[in-house]
Length: 141
Image 1 (cartoon, helix red, strand yellow):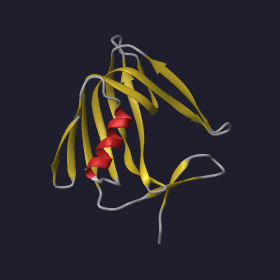
Image 2: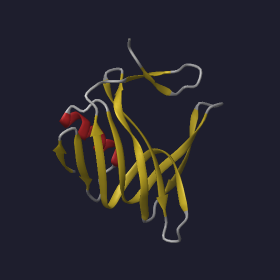
Image 3: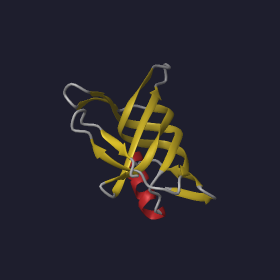
Image 4: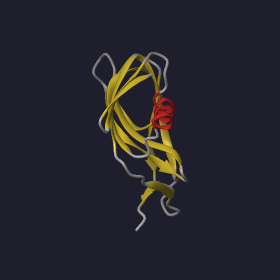
């Protein structure tokens, strides 16, 4: 992982074998970023993504282990209980052009990952909503 800062923005590159969510957590810890928007493209060869089932309050997970284009990743960095937390959605395409996507649980970079991160000089923590099971933004007065 390498990154460079430009005012409130960062450009980050992930290299083969690096896992996206763990790398973003490391980035946030190293830089002290507590709130940011994230967008990315790249290539992965191991991914786990899913859809949240509101009724069961569990993720239905899908996994793929093949060469995939990371068509788009969008999400955010923030905190929960004062610790780093990130939330990403991603879409992936195979060689035939089939596209899959959802909530990102895990993704390993196969060639490169190019991330644009816009840091916001603030903090928004999360708290689990007992009705939905979703970790939601919490805003203090």
